[in-house]
Length: 420
Image (tube, rainbow, N blue to C red; front, side, top):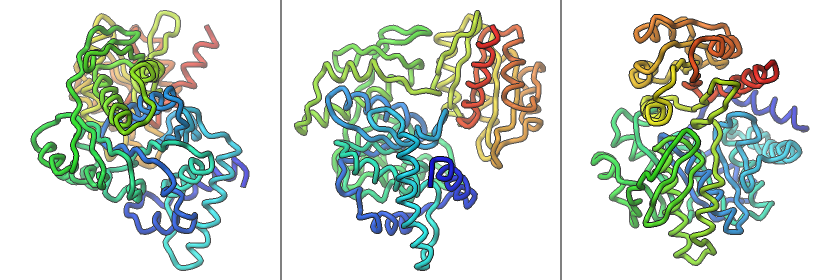
């Protein structure tokens, strides 16, 4: 298969939907020679913050001289972002090569009477083989959904498990209480230390079962602005080019993980940690773009906890600006809970329907938005919403609700730039 055929194959497999469980991925990796057994694995689970934490950790390891493979899902601005080496997306040629390698085994599995692997399992297997072939020193793996039955949890031997914030999301699959959700994500901890931070008692009662629990200290905010922030952690100061105070905790998780690896004998120094942190920028998380005299913020907030963090960041760094939202959400997300967090900040809403079968109809969403401001409109597509928001009297335009709308939003913003 070439690149185009590989992407078409993945899209076709996505129609089968999401599958949880480890039997299929275990068989698939076995047929590929169990490449995961050759890698040093750093495994990340959590409700929010996984991508940012993986970005910080990847850059710290890279600056320390190591070759790092990173597996993220979903991608935001381009398919190849799902598989990274030293922070750079896999090439089109290698996408075709490794998806083809995995497909041959997946097709044979079906001929032998096994269930077809899901699109996520195929991508994950391709990433693992790619990391092995490229002799990556570390593989940073982000769970796709939950932990216990997520395909990435097929990994039995790992150096470290990292768990970010625990909050309500995917409750139909992960459980209706924070304890249930924490138990599901805690399942990635397999005879290895757990790095996390102190959360509510319901969550910590679960995490306390770890054989070795490494808790981050509370990071201290030294200064912040709409351009970046400085934090202090364990007596050291770090410059972050990521906005949002919640990124301090994500950064602390990465630093604490790096400190543990340094204790194990890996060549990680205070200087490489600082440089790695400073060079980290996770797109689609409070990503600021200035166009003429207006500011866009692209953010992946798609649940109430994420929306709360977004609202706090706007109050901290953009309090003097008139705000409108371009908002698109999935039907299975708590849109009411999200609006409760951000609705009071909105001058206007421009509601859109994400281009996915899971997308909540913009006409339904706009009625919810009108509970907070009468200046709410349903738009035919992302481009229309971005152009209308830019033409409004608002000077801060926040695009959020689903990662799936950010790529089209960025394309539209770039079109506005070209016209100026």
